[in-house]
Amino acid sequence: MRIFLMRCLLFHSMACGIISCSSYRHMQKINASDDCLQKFKPRIQRALYSISVDVTGNHISGLLLIKTMPDSSTRMVFSNEMGFSFFDFGFSRENEFKVYQIIPQMDKKAVIKTLRKDFELMLFRNMPEKRRFTLQDSSLIYYGFPQTKGVNYYITDTNCSKLVKMQRASKRKAVMEAFMYLNQASVPDSVLIRHLNFQFSITLKKI
Picture 1 (cartoon, rainbow, N blue to C red):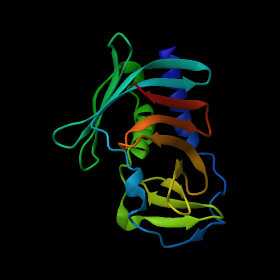
Picture 2: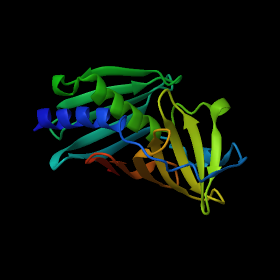
Picture 3: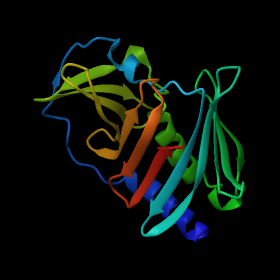
Picture 4: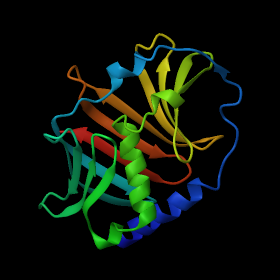
């Protein structure tokens, strides 16, 4: 099942670059406060989550440990309940990504790239402030951060009192969206990551 799961992720990563349509053209560019998103940024010192991954009817689950290290880097370790590690990823303080360990079935460039981008969005990383732009529709504000390919969006209500959702998008269409619920300490209690062009989702629940 793990091999099939990884093949599905590989196919998904390629498909995301092919499918697109116009979803942002109607929005208006605006000026918005640079401070808005800071209150929604996760501040995780150490948190353990139950994790469920579903791809086209196949399921894998386990535990995800997220920990901030003394050098301000972040480590993410996904293992099963018996302690077998599927992957160990890291983001440096400067947002450099490193694979410390990964099982052979998952050691595919497209799979790693997809997971890196998903967790990067969730952890509010790779947000070049100088390139940021802001869009508004009737009820939402989209804070856009251009990436090497596509854009990461953090979407709030017009008063910036709520993080409605996050998106990864091509130039024309969202390809992934995520919903995150923070507790009073700005630690995510739950996260849902859902890809829109493929049946692939990740669910996290804090233990």
